[in-house]
Length: 617
Image (cartoon, rainbow, N blue to C red):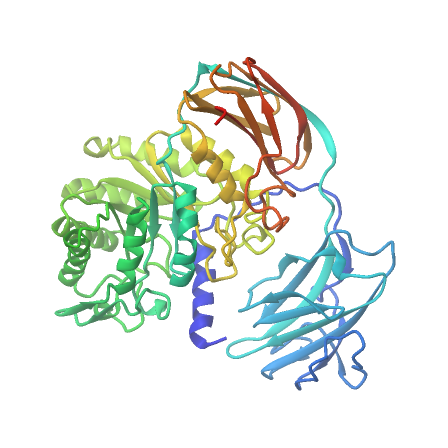
């Protein structure tokens, strides 16, 4: 791991920390976790180890490690066993009986830096970088055998701290059928609000490679959203991450821009009719007050305004329409994104907005893109006080949140109402995800990339529809970032996750909303219908399976083929079952003259059932 890579990991962790309002979202059963192999969090555990590179078969069950040292974990610069070399190799025997063989094994580990874990000679985990807390990751159950199991671990070190500890737990199996639900849809009865399509969009941070972007651009087209927000992260922290880094060089009097890859990104979006929203942040190197400090107000505000104008003018003159610009990112999140005051940010906004309008008078500009940590709305009032008193352009008011969008939306609406000149301004949630960063939901094997991601996304989409003043929501993220977080709709290796398929269901449904009800709080439903088709989506966010009766009434007489799709542990969820990535119908019915259809089945925990009715083609 290089020094730059490690800095990038540090920034990514800090990024997720400062945007998160961390709170419990537990939905699992309250069954006790079984400890299969304890970590050394409570009591030191003994391992065989060596600091010298062993033969290539060192991870094999037959390898003789009797001449290795014995030591107590954790191993590291300040562990129970001191480790200061570039690498360490560990082995341990884990005896298991039929009674103790784990059914749902999960690794619990702390690593600094890269870790590779082998069980009985087979690689089961590999994580680059480092962590700042114990992490969890699922292990396939067939990795273990009855009898002696050999756990073999290699951990490396290049710079900074170093540490390694490892254990295994057996997570409780998910619930069995316990509850019932009745869902009724009537396609004859109008409901509101409609399923607005351009409301839901996607966000990408800079932690993704351009080759992955062009590999996955077809998936963005398949998703069908209308806009993508991108944060280029100008400044010293982004070396090797910013497109054509440093994208902005030269001096304050003579700024030099490299648009090569940024233009490629812009063109690729416009070709599939996805409107870019670009974030103008942070202080680039030529305008930094202190070298490498990108979170301060630019040293030359005339140059900052000129920079913003140059960017907007560049794309306008090139015939590339960039309709949305956001000034800065999360200025209320010190010290990583901004180290100044509200007044200093307001000056950044004033000069940046003026520059955007100079470069492209038709562009829409907004801010302050606050994180709203702990639902603190002081930045909203401070920003709007300044914008109102200076009569600045403000085309949208933007903010972020994770886990629950309602508190900040309600505060923003109350806040805007106090400024009559700006009361009409629309709201944009320019970063959002159902799950909270720096929790187990955001890492590999977490709920954000398993089947759970699908019902949570649909639940939040339904909630956002109740706020018409919020005209755009940008889902964080489209691509998995090149960090430990796994919150993307598309994986590092280009696979659709369950949440991707749920997003696609929403975009596939007709716009006109129809009446739909459920008698179970845990089982939710949305339905819509027009002359070309009808759709009803039912989801279950609970930890219980639901035996469900779903009745579809008022099916238009010109629609005669009904298809049923599922997202759950065995359907359309790549990380639960790699054999099922895309949505394929699990049932197909020919309706003939029927205008009603009833289905009896199970909507499993964390599952989705999607019913479509179309014409026979």
